[in-house]
Length: 299
Length: 324
Image 1 (cartoon, each protein chain N blue to C red):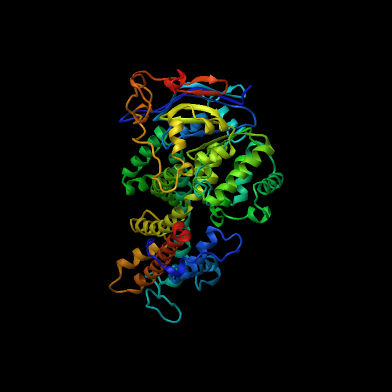
Image 2: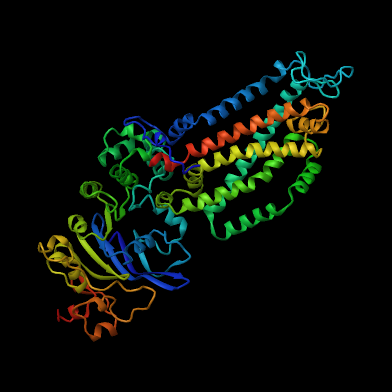
């Protein structure tokens, strides 16, 4: 993707355009990528809707109508209702809050831990680096599900903590990516120059090395969010994730799958919500990867 | 007392193929406010020698085997990383060869220039900013305020090298090491940068070690020259004396190879052969296999640098004995 040559995107910034940073260049390139922009808009809309859910949801998420039971979509219940007569539209809205929160919180954790750990290992190099990366290898080899079950036992059913824990698993790949980037950056003259200038190490790490790895970091983060959401769906499916009456997209899909032959709407609507989010994030991630490719902006 | 007195510096690289003897017993001296030149072909050890002084040799495989380097009474080779870090950037600075890769692409030029001031002198942002604008004017970048918020990729190569120089000089070091500061630049820019260096050296009263393979460059700005070959100093002399009458066959061959001294229409003069492989131990004079005046003696024993007259030394048996 990044090698695809699009001449109209390689135009240098207009002469005299002041402070045209790499970021602004990247933004300009991103704006030309319609899919990425669409992804961004959809995500923003989802975020706003999630924030406003308590006010715009037509029903309460635990509001049952056992007499009604599961009915297909109609004007009163746009997405239909589930077996307990709860409004599915409402539950998808509330589920989105959980799924998005989990997705971004876990990604945030993996971002912080992975970036610092990887940058540190790559910068120090030598034996410290070898030791730190072997530790990552060991964690990599732990079976994920068992790891999460242990964490669930340890943390209880607190979903925020649980998905922080997912983030703590997800940082491993981030650490590897950042370490590789930092190791190649270390050879660059401007890093050598910081040594000549006698700058302290933490400054070099925070202000010179990590900013230069931001491109891959951001892109990888946008790819992590959907993966964490899928993981949440998987864990909820196993009964390890979100518990009733709270909902999440993963949980709703799980319920839908069980009755998909008789009540397909219970599967279709939550799946659609999850799919749209994942597509948006992937498009945005793709767009960011191209937009932040420094080579494209310099050639 | 000299500002920097390097004695018998020896740096080797212990690689899987064997020991690369990059620098072998190099000695030189820099007086306060003086510009010296270290000249040599690629691989002659001139860069390794300067990096050794600043503790920038990648170790392993590199190792400083021997020598002292007294700077203001402190031995740079023995003082430990902490002392070295406080000397680097404050008292000794360095300009790198390639300005295109020596600036952090993700940091505004102004921030990069202010950083050493904030770290070493504890200046506030505003104070640092004033100093940076002043320094940018000094290196010939007008409109400093506007350029402070620019990004490195918006600058041309010559501008970036000026920024690099400004960055190296911002803390007013006593010694500047310039490693091929003009090699990556266009010829027209080269002249400007050299003039700039010479002017700043006068105005700030600092000493400069200019490392280059370009004899034209050293002739223009240096007072004394050290000619290096295969990790050793072959000849040292005042610039005029060296150009007027080289006292080592290698220097002579180098001067003959200058395109400006050559008669139009004749093929360009080159030195036959190749520099020696630094992994294989060298028995005699390293230049002997390529030297037109070499005798048996030159391949048997290694000559050492010896003073002919004060300020002028050569590492050639035959010159030392008055045969050449």
